[in-house]
Image 1 (cartoon, rainbow, N blue to C red):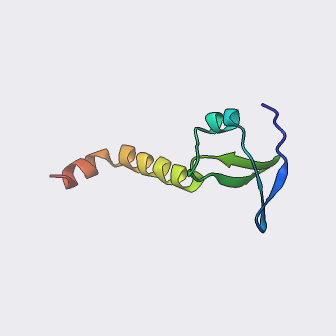
Image 2: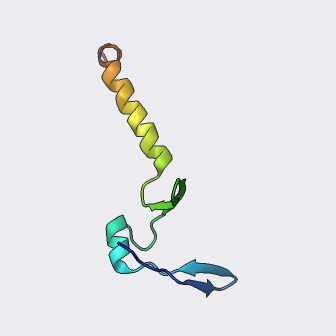
Image 3: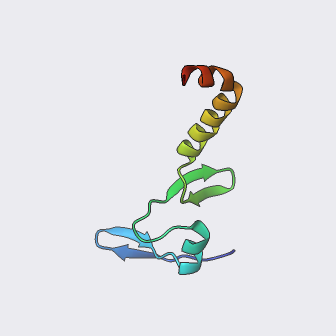
Length: 75
């Protein structure tokens, strides 16, 4: 997808209007929060929080590695 977005004035700020096709690809809508992170080739816009995704990945890794300990603690 190659989409150009024009920066427009919104009150004392500036913003862009996201087309519905882009919102659909992001699985985002009005009222959702988008996250911008730096990438080697520019910036990345996502609907998911990269820090939360990393925390979940680490949690799942710990649960896999320490499955027996967690099972014993749950009793």
